[in-house]
Image (cartoon, rainbow, N blue to C red):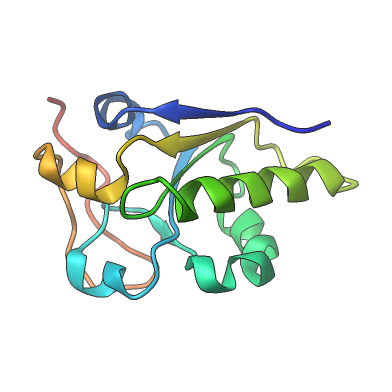
Length: 134
């Protein structure tokens, strides 16, 4: 059975971000390294995404909601979210992921609306997970 994919606004994500059951998946490629990223997000570049899905499932253990984004969430983010949903539908076992979402307006919209960004170069990001509410 195919999973539905929904959209989430940056305001909604900011209010949910502190919950331990959510993982943010950044599928941008090289631009993540110089544009910054959402603190605590996982990085699974779109150009190698299909090959890395099993690693994403491992990295997201204990999470039931994954929020995908790219720069604008118009192509790469939605495409990777769909590929992930299709992969889960074909799995024999339950990965525990119930919700797959896409961040409206992507990273660029997140940053433009004044949401906090992290500029660390650590992988995985160890950025501050306690972000102030707006």
